[in-house]
Length: 312
Image (cartoon, rainbow, N blue to C red; front, side, top):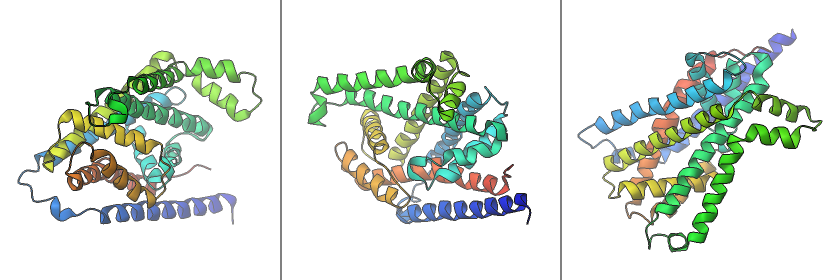
């Protein structure tokens, strides 16, 4: 059998395995949701609006990746969308979404796949920074008496601010930092990282950070809409604080496949209990946030993944 046919067979088998794992993960996730509590509402306006915001959310991510990739290979918004959605499918069941790059590199040329992996890492790092930045803002907004270990301890708050400043500077001046500290490295991969970072100016990296922050704000609006849909008695300020701390907390917890379901539910119960007694409704809001922002795009991405061709 020709080598190319063997590679094609392996890739098709890989696609089948990925799709099985992705849909299996979705099945176990959906099993945890009581849909009888969901569709008793008279108006579907909330749901329609959240779905529209989902389109905006992922459009920002698609634009961000297009900006990153266009520095070494021109890619249309449509192909960027295909890459991002396919990457969502290949990452949904992997620890902390590390499999994202697998789907994305299918839509760039063979010579630029390493560049695409590194660029995907830059985009992911900027989104992590956005999450931590919002958590830092949330810590300063915590009202007295909610989390006593933090709300009256300005030392902790300023330490967090200092940490966020360092993260921000690492992003903005990443090219200069990498060039300075790793210029004499003999590692081929390090040299490749330096090459990729040299593609981007400080202005372009700031735009990437801005797009990540805008994504987070859209995400928060979606969450608050769901809290209103499920009649959760929580203010917009408390919902911002709780959600920001919740997602920053989850960043530090390695999660894998089915274990992620229990981790997210447990951490949401723990964190949101400081702000509301309606925990079951909040868990529903977070679950439907996942359905709209992750599951629906993953389903779309799975069809794109089926059609994807790998150029060996």
